[in-house]
Length: 172
Picture (cartoon, helix red, strand yellow):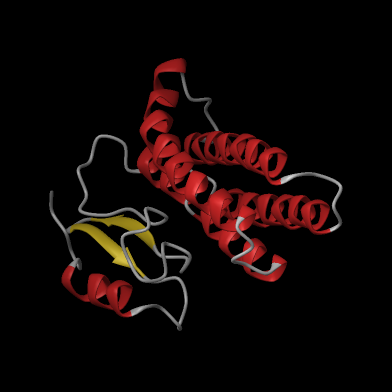
């Protein structure tokens, strides 16, 4: 059984790491380039840890990690622009922390891709395909009649509310 509680604890852990990294940037302990490289490492680790949480209690095999390549490549491209914005002075450190946490939230997609393995679903929590960018706590639940998109919070964005209605159930 996948470990959703561990998945959410991982989000909290990596958000703390992002906050500390941004504090170091704000205090002048590191430069933007170091911040960006370290963010890449944190994202790689967060996505891999989410994959392992999705596989729990088993361990994913080496081929399972191949799904991470395209996910990370996309995040790294966004991170490049983010680092340019930071270097240009367009953001406060609170804004940097908040935006960096969105990247951590995107790691949920690795969890859900593993949990729903082999099933072609129209969207995955964490994938960034809604206004909340997947930071809403939504999930897929498999029931006898198909897959259901279930909202995780009462303050869900309009897209997640719509998904809960139209993908109840969803049959691939």
